[in-house]
Image (cartoon, rainbow, N blue to C red; front, side):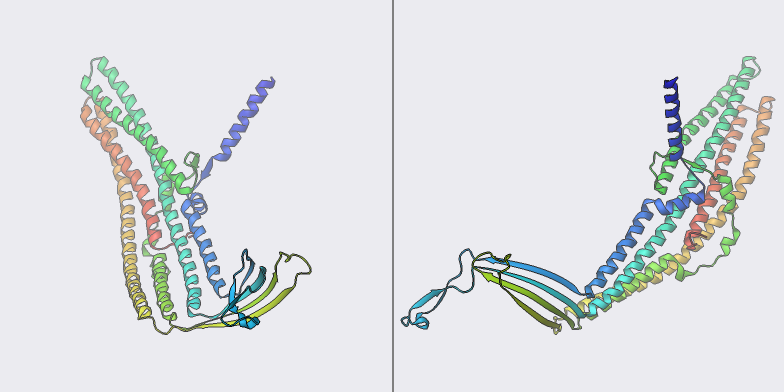
Length: 447
């Protein structure tokens, strides 16, 4: 009895643990999860943090800097200097050997440096702000891409799930038809060819079902990667392909106007232009003088023995105030050359900005065309599927009544299976093309 309780308890723990690891996600929940946990979103957030640190690093260039230094020297053998001996009462023309200073000395200094003016520093502060904006723009673009990728990955999983259901239903129907036809054949009321034709069709469906199941496993793993989940983790999708396709049918979206200045690609190109403007200013600022100052405080101790840690050691203090002014006078036209290069890059950035605006408008037109076509295709696919179902049903009745052949039935079945897949793909296309249009229009994430 005790052993049974242990086994039951272990089983319950395993079930609870597995339930905790399994995620049930609607499409909206999947998007929100991916925006926080996808690998691309995480790294984009890290880039913003790095940009903020870079901004502060640039700011500190103009703030006071304090440094300290301790210098200890021990003359193992002191330098000898030669002085005229007559200075010490000796004979003219002769020299006396003499050493200066103590054998050991120690200096401790502290220095405060302060930048007073530097044109490059002022431009650097502006550049740091622009760099932060670029990182934030990159995060926004990444999030838009993650949203679209998540919608597509989620839709692909649903497509494979629905395909499996339809193929299994078709397989069950074919197996029944094959069984009934085989019984008719055994009674001598139909030809063996009809049985063989149904076997061929069933074999094709089995092959397609096996392939779709393998693709379904890959689709789940692709979704996991998009979400930032381990590929072996189990997730359950709570939305259906039909529900999402209905939600994605929004004709009003085709009338939405583009605000190009708010488009992320335009903002990125605009910030690139701004960066190049600052690069021109930076090169021009290098012709300006720079001014800095420093204050130095120090203590020095001397002796022939290492007594610097003793109270009786005598220390001599000193202090120094300095100002440094650097004035660029002539650079052999180096600064001029670098400035001209920066201006050329700025011109290129302006051209790229205009090109980007044109591409964005074209991208929106293309996305609207694809989305509009997908809506029409969905309506057409739904109608043709209904026709294919009726044709297949009629052919099945005619076949068992002996009016039509197995080839006629096979053709009707093949047509039906094609229309089924076309309808599923049409639903997925509406979802995918709407996601692409939202990205092209720069529709906000929480829209």
